[in-house]
Length: 183
Image (cartoon, rainbow, N blue to C red; front, top):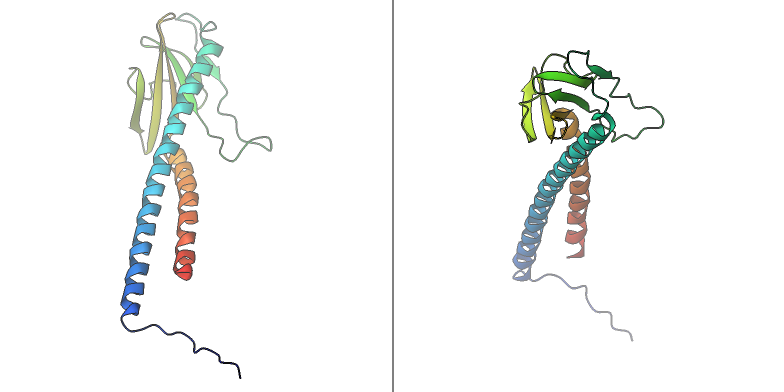
């Protein structure tokens, strides 16, 4: 004769402990997901800022010795190029301007031809032009007396940072039901 053990049932004192454990772990998992989202968004913004600085240096290297002296007409660069089949979905549209004092010497076709994006002081700034927010980086070139200004629309940056952060968040949230099931 084979004895089959009865299926185990939870004692009434064990059930609150299990529910408490599940709630605590779910709360911590949600906290970790929110923290991860915030950190990912911040780091993505840092990467975008680093790219602005890199683009400013590339523009500087391309144009610093080609800039005409005022009162010559400014150079107009036909950027940003539209993405095509050889592009990348994360490719961003950037605008730039090259200033010497109050004179605009070169700019991308989509940049304002009559004003700077932001005050011409070195470093980063976030400004509002019309209905658009812009992230701007100013790179000084004291050897040529230039200020290279690179600008990117805030909504473009925000959409990409949000997408990357959400992808990270979705992976964290997917683990919550699996943890509950394992417990």
